[in-house]
Image (cartoon, rainbow over all chains, first blue to last red; front, side, top):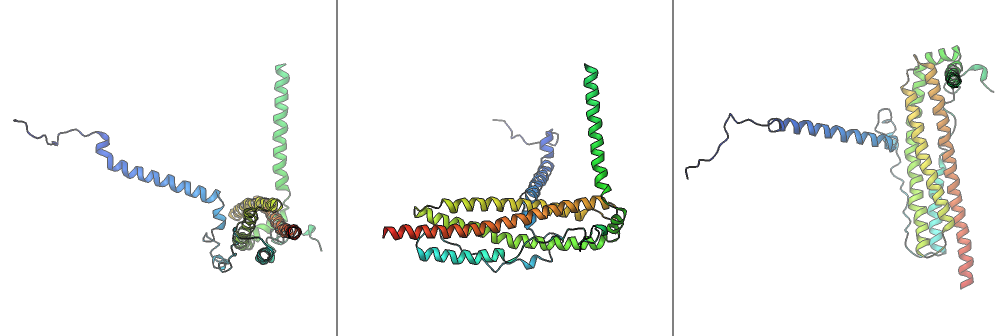
Length: 126
Length: 180
């Protein structure tokens, strides 16, 4: 009956974790953030996403030239197959195929030493 | 016996080190002093050209890439599915589509490899390391030619698919004509 409620006294010894738990929380958060960012950058570089990112330094000059207007018409996977529907598909396909081949992509040899003007003059051909 | 083994090991190690040194020398020897000085004096303008090429190729990759991707997923695969849903024979078309998708994956990987190589070449200081710069450029040049070959292959598959659709249509008309 005479028991008194126990209150913590200033003399009570706190464990290491109790004493530093806020600092541990901050450091833990930072470590997790660094790990997550590292994984993200790794995936960004390895997956080929970096090659499609035109906001990278040096590529911003062409980022506004991305073709955003022309979208390929989706052909439905459901529906009848007859001369008319195949004809419709052929027309859409033909249009996109011509678009794909309209530009002779990656042609030429712009990395040729002669083009970059440091080639050996003795190897120049007419 | 041990002596023989030891001698053989020494001979192999010596031969290997000579061949490595020879390879390194041949790489550096290909660059004439004239070329080296030309690289060093034109370094800024060469870097400018490479940066322009890097940007224009990146744009080409994005614009061409999205057309090639959508051709495969939105048209070829959808049409194959429609034929399949109608219980029609689409084996020929599926075969071409699979080859096209494989070629597209190869293009993605080859372009990535080329872009990384070109970026590496751009990062090299050509006033200090002309030989390394030239070697990096030569590698990028080879990789760009591979990307070009991938594009030619993709265009060929696009034509092949069109032919396969025409063949399918001829067969389809013949069969439905007979049935009716």
